[in-house]
Length: 446
Image (cartoon, rainbow, N blue to C red; front, top):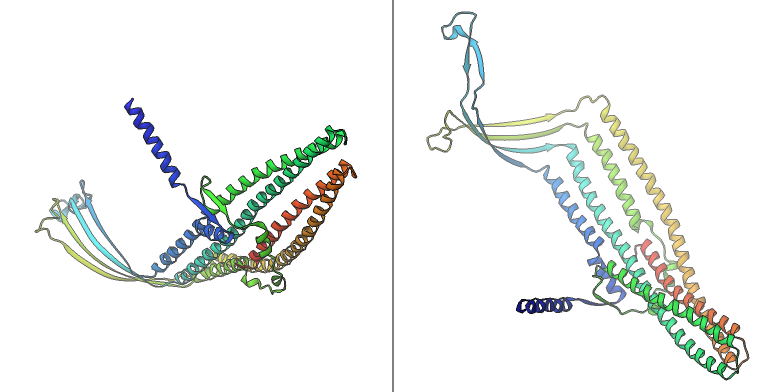
């Protein structure tokens, strides 16, 4: 019994600790973007790719630096190799051969080699390629950051949209329930037809269904945002910005008149990286036709014996050393190098063509994105005015309906028009935010 109580106490204590360790976040949109750039899983790996590229660059650099290697070799000749020599060397008969063994049972060698690359065209190209590789990783990180920024803004906006939608639907529900109650009471007094009550009940049922769906979408959207931010789904996240303020902040007509420089876009920079990489590959293939020169210095000691006594003080070691220079001159490869060079040249030409295509694609994409943003601002203005008019119409129809001057069908149509205008206005706000984000993304505006 005592053990059960202890186990229950420990479980209870661990549960309390888990609750205490649960983090809570309160973030504006800008704070959410900054948090994601540091904690998003893809952003973390993109930063690590840059670190890998830096190490790769140093690895390539060390190829041309002095290299020192040492090794120790031990050989146990438990059966010595035999050779034959004329027997007459040892007083034997002419024409006969005698078996002899050369060497000792134990051999040991210790040596060190210092090598230095003096000239190699491939190494020089490799240094340039390592620099480009680092630039590719940095540009990939920048593109990842832009993608994450866009995803965070869209996800943040989706949460606000779902919550605002639920808020509006809840207000509609409260208003509709009041009207339904009043109409039902009037029906009981025999002043209106039952159809009026039934029509309002249908509308209320639809609003309740939409409200339930909006609440579910809000929860899912919030969890999606947590995933993008690198926050555990079980942790608490509060959003401090609201949809209306964000929409207003993202209405900037000055960007519509600004010039677009394709060279500043990240996709064009990545295209330039590819072109430069293929240019270096062509240069690499050409460099393979150049001679390469290297030098090395060897220092070593040998020891021999029929007994393993290499660690004894009286063991005799024989030292040796040498200096070597190697010059490798490519002469003829049956046109193999030429074929590889031509392949690299074609790939380089393809990269230049792709870069031109990227430039034209970005120019067209900018025009489309700019047009979409301009249209979203117009729709925002129109939907705002339409909402105001729909609210006035609905209120007038509500008064007429209560006074018996209009039918339930006319009132219901006014309600549906209002509900549609409300959702259109909310969608217009989120469109302004998303279209501005898309425009900032293509122009590399942070």
